[in-house]
Length: 390
Image (cartoon, rainbow, N blue to C red):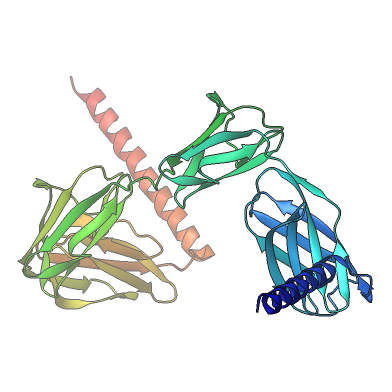
């Protein structure tokens, strides 16, 4: 019985030893591999992981196990699919020397060693005021000797006012780069709101009109400071302007209009109207030789104007025109009576415009000679009579 136990024990020991030897050979012996894989390996400090890029062949011919090794110790491993050209093995590594091993069906590869070391890091504190931003912002870690760029951006409606680096103003800039960083730094940006459009000062003019006419524009008009505004007064038939008040004071219209110039305050303008009386105009031509238009007797509104046109007949010209007994002058045989406030009597006369003939001249000379003789005779008689007196 004891002999049987010894035999069984020796068999189990021999079987265990054989399995161990076989396992060691599978892991360490790749002499039967058909393909040798080469690769570039880099450790990404920023992403905390190992980047493996296959160089020959450029893609894996089969599915493989890719492992990060530290000596004989497997730190981490991933399964890479056939056709992979680059893989990333995520995981932060401590300082040390590593290599990458690739094992697959008929495929084997070992990378060159790479070293992971952690350099000194420095903090750059980046901040931005109201109206914009800086990127990156906050506490930014930078490895010793590296560079870091910061971008400054103003929001809509704002502009960069100043960028300060380590307490020193750099003026208005949109980016700044710290080069070969060897110490802690600060960077801050301030912004200012862009000036808006200058507020426009305006004033109001309130226009109103009574019965008998209108004013345009009417109601409340908004006027920009320093500008001008013209108002036009229109009378209804049978009415005239009675009074125009601007800010309570009487003003005179010019051609039925009033203009506010260089407006600097609020104003009012109001117009009142009155019913017009009728005035009668009587036109009489006292001689032959022409006509006047209009003629006869007719009525006009009080305060209105009336123009008259005279037309002499051939061989005649205007002799005289009187209005209520007062002679008026003509302009190209026309005259106008303005602001009629009473009845008018107009009289017109014409005279011949024919030239004097030679016979007429002779008669005039004869008459003049006779007149002179009479004057001389009368004078002589008078003088002689005076001398005869004692």
